[in-house]
Image 1 (cartoon, one colour):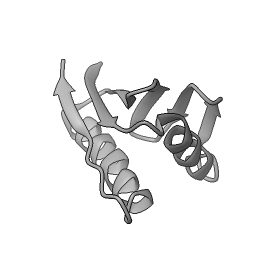
Image 2 (spheres, rainbow, N blue to C red; image 1 turned 180 degrees about the horizontal axis):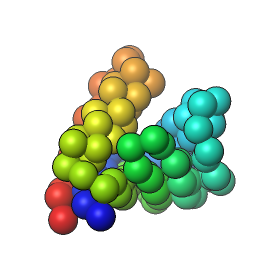
Image 3 (cartoon, rainbow, N blue to C red; image 1 turned 60 degrees about the horizontal axis):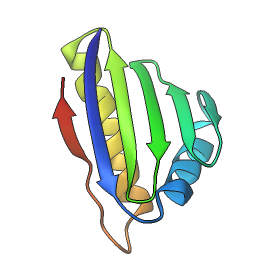
Amino acid sequence: MIHAQGHVATPEASRWLQRLCHHFSRKIAVQYDAHQGRAEFPWGVCEMRADAQALHFACTAQTGEALAQGRFTIEEHVKLFARRAPMAVQWDFG
């Protein structure tokens, strides 16, 4: 498995986590509450965690190509939902 971790600095991490997970749950299996979430995408899994400073992402996939698709999916949805106050995911690959 290949992993990538990222975060978005925001004091409203819980709200963003719930919005993203609710949106994803329309098409894929998602489990979430106010502080954590798990989304099972066709390309792999993304686990999310909200704290007072940021929304954190931990994505895993079988291949580099699948992981790149996962990062793109997360990045584009963050951009979509944060149109009024743009935010960007900062990735740390490991």
